Image: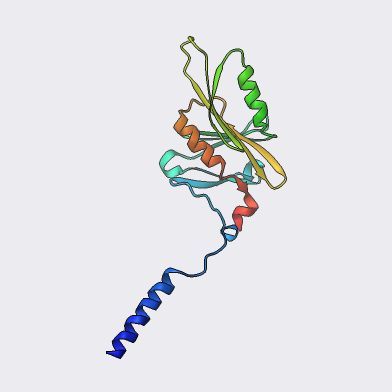
Length: 178
């Protein structure tokens, strides 16, 4: 009977020990963003030492990447995804002021974060479809990039939110290789 009691205590002790353990401090955990249905695209071929997550090519088609005359890198995948990345300061306060002072469009800020803004623009009583946009400030080392939806794209708010999530995955290609 004593042996059964020792066995029972040992099993309970092992169970409790396996459930507990030493927790890692939150600062030591590496935050790695992985979007379901997305894959990493290396942008070094186009002069940007960056990587970004884009919709998977086998499902949505190969990404079309274009370096524009303005120095912006446009990444388009299918009809529902289009990012533009360029060097800049991504001044969100200036954008908000511009949206308020716009004489043509009526603008509404749909979502605001520390480094991102999602907004819609509409021309009242013009029969023009509402346009949805975002701007994200990506800070990679000492460099700042403006990431936004492509100029010519027409995206619903759901796709704008997904593109913003993809924009948040931008990191240095050197960091991605590690």
